[in-house]
Length: 204
Image (tube, rainbow, N blue to C red; front, side):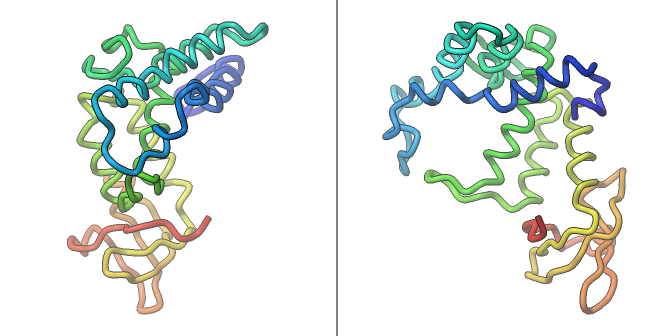
């Protein structure tokens, strides 16, 4: 994403480090909360949200860590519409790298199995993120993310919602989820097969 968005070499280095360390504040959250299978209470959720502040405090105290890394940890749950946390910042008040990390973080959270929820089907993750494009996320960044993500899937095996398995051979740049696939029974064009979606990615 950083490369496609035209970041400098120095900014790409900062983005890499920020992405790796953005959740470091969770080391100060009790494990019983991080691994709780049921719904969090309001008090528990407020404590979970403090991982952004804990991460900022931890990182800014480490010599040699650029301020941008701590700022990304602090702001990666802020959203364009001001409905994020911890400070309900909006749009241009959110640090640029934080916006990039936020998109990757949400995708990872939604598409991964967690103790408190199962991974969402791939197409539902992308559809949900697309619905949030003019509220939670920066539209330009989200478009870059989705196009880059889908581009990496060419040649990969995926399972469709009808359990059929095939290999992606082409991405439609205007409708990234509507791919062209090769299966044992022939070529499938998801632009024409309206009822079919990509359930999950099999090939690594």
